[in-house]
Length: 475
Ligand code: FAD
Ligand code: NAI
Image (cartoon, protein in one colour):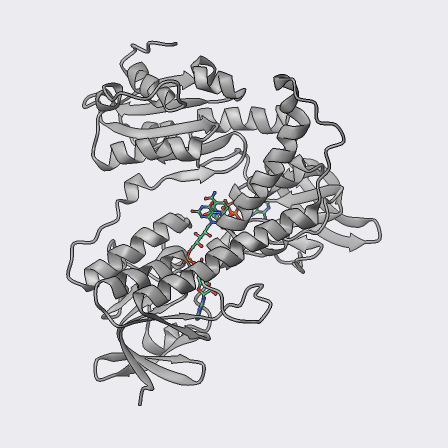
């Protein structure tokens, strides 16, 4: 017999889960969200916000900003005639600032739950069975019954055999966001999003950073022109050492620090470092969820299998966010959470998976939406391309930040925008215009005819659209 009953129970309080819960409650459903993780709460109380707020998006961006300011004070002030000597960084203050932001935001979600009347159930949730068309969910020694269940249990860092993560010396994202001093030598395994973002943070603060990447291509998911520009900037201008095509053989800890033996091609190499970040992707959280008990189907990569509408193989069981297919991005999970709540309410929820932006918060930032040039070529789609460097933009000049470009790809026949790729300052904000354009099925000519404020970085988007038709005005 269930202790409580709800219309909707969400398992997991990360971006996918908390947004699904809030939207379900807004739509009039009695809703509970189960979350188990205290993260770093000093009182041991459950914290909402999942990976994103606690040990992901938000804390990483806080550290990126602090390290950016330190870097600017050391290297960029001088061009404005500002002298800043003996600039120092107190890592403790930087980390406390980050922790305060996390505390504010995670308790903010608790406030949103109260406002929207979402019940927070603390503990690990798992499927216990089904009775009278209601799912039975076990949590903290009780059973709650639910008409609909939304699985939003997220993901955890993937670890490598023989490389024990203690989050002090060898770290995944959790430890890498909480280092209490700048390591002299920092090793990173994996030149993906976390490796580049957190590698940049500690490099700017003075670490000698070496990133070892298994793939032979750098940033293989990005447009090749963007990947090329990023490689040049990170390795030649910023001094990040990145080795590609690496096979790690052994990782040993000793008195001198960590020694990594690895191969590249026919050569064998040794890297010595004081701290190591392992950032080689993430795995879905399904262990202990009781999937086997109720027959919840997983796919070949251990993710909860869903259709285009995030429905699982079980009636009234849905899944969103990192625990299912698709990019592991907070905004993707949030959109899915909204869609599922609206579908439960009989509304026409949808997620346009073709218009989900990607952002890498390095400096310069990298952002894109839609197809890359490689994908279009592989798919045999004829396209036109317009590319505008930030060097041709007055605002970028004024800001002293002219690295990179905006590249727009449009269908050769219809002019429809198929992909937009930005590397440069504020790429994370600029990409929104491209997302909006693609969501509404715009053609490049539409963007070319929109009045963009002057002087702004957004004029590069305007010019790139003009360049698609070979008529840029400022380049
Ligand atoms: P999660 O955020 O992982 O939340 C799942 C929650 O479920 C967790 O709180 C977990 O404790 C809980 N849970 C799991 N199992 C159970 C259970 N059985 N019972 C109860 N609770 C359970 N994405 C971006 O879009 N932009 C970024 O800038 C960005 N930066 C990132 C930086 C880092 C360092 C990392 C690691 C990730 C970053 N991401 C970023 C990815 C983003 O954090 C994830 O895509 C997002 O958090 C996924 O949301 P989710 O709700 O699916 O899962
Ligand atoms: P990732 O998938 O971005 O990169 C992992 C990298 O590690 C890949 O390049 C892969 O080839 C490499 N790799 C895998 N095994 C390896 C091995 N044995 N040796 C050397 N290299 C190896 O994963 P990452 O960086 O761990 O991030 C996880 C996810 O978190 C991202 O995919 C993304 O979805 C999310 N994230 C998003 C951010 C954003 O939106 N700005 C920031 C950080 C994370």
